[in-house]
Amino acid sequence: MQKLILFLGLIFCVSFSSSSLAQKKPLIVFVCGDHEYSGEETLPILAKELEKNYGFNVKVLKSYPNQNSEKNIPGLEILKEADLAVFYLRWRQLVPEQLALIDDYLKSGKPIMGFRTTTHAFNFPKGHESEKWNAFGEFALNAPPGWGGKAAHTHYGHNSTTDVSVIQAAKKHPILQGVAPNFHVSSWLYRVLPDYPTKGSEWLLMGKSVNPDKAAIDNPVAWVGTNSFGAKVFTTTLGHPEDFSVEAFQRLLINAIHWELGQKVPKKWKGKIDINVPYRGMVN
Image 1 (spheres, rainbow, N blue to C red):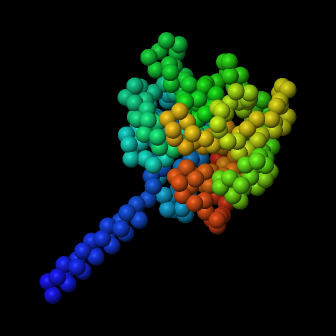
Image 2 (tube, rainbow, N blue to C red; image 1 turned 30 degrees about the vertical axis):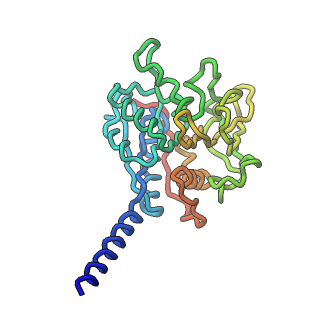
């Protein structure tokens, strides 16, 4: 009888332990601070959808006290627990202690996702001790190392928009499952060619500028790859707040997050997300 009780107790413990592991939800940390594109408003809505309908734990961090604060994003310690870090930054100058937390995450080799201006996430003065972070786009996201310069990283004017199409060679990629083959967004097209995305990246979506302010060439607007830390990367140069109301873009992001975390992309789409954030531009 005693042996039976011990056996049943062992079975219970093993079952409980297995159940606990199965119930552990991946943690996605969103890090926002972009001056212009209201990432601190759009990404929390996306995060809520991921938590409610897709079973993830989420945490959203924002520049403090507002999107124009370039030197402080409280709470970055949570990156130690993150399974995926999603960045929407623009020209930050974070203090060394906060940079160290991002550095530790990058060195962990865990996956990373970046939106639009995160290609130029940091903007330290020449000669500053943290100047190397200006190349964040390149070493973390396989994107140009900062805005302008030799990379000729620029865009085609604030009065332009972008036609987006799935690149045929990539159409079977899991991230593109259920994504419309053609859609239109409000983002003005970023130029990343000819040298970026970095060699070895796989292009997923191509953008064509509509009503450009200068001679324009088509440019990739979403790609995946492995960064210099050996981590899985998903980068998109889209991210105008009105882009988030486009269902094809929403599905792209939900798919990309699952792919980054090594999970199967959901076959069943949960439906369009209610994200309606107007473009405000630069405000004090």
